[in-house]
Image (cartoon, rainbow, N blue to C red; front, side):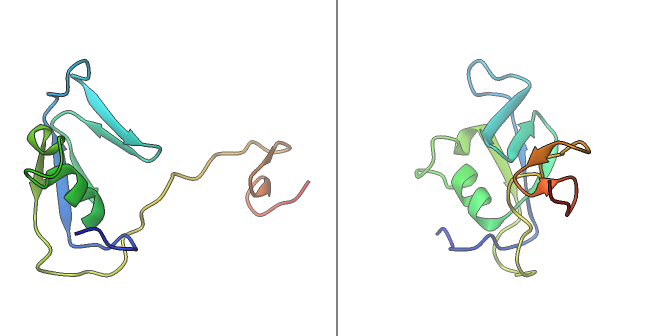
Length: 100
């Protein structure tokens, strides 16, 4: 059920706080941190990874709201931009749009 791009179906999820040792939040990867009982908008792929009963061990730890019945376009999914202080070099050069 995973797609090659992150697609927006208007879905959200709520982490129940039930993964052992992670009562206040669960980090899925570098750009998905789910706080207990807080709704988070997610792309269709993330909703599938977290909520497909019988296919994901995480399904019992998350509540998925919504389905794939309405498509809203591409979901802005990906790592959060890395903040770079002025004069420091990062992956995109120095500061926003600059170069060292």
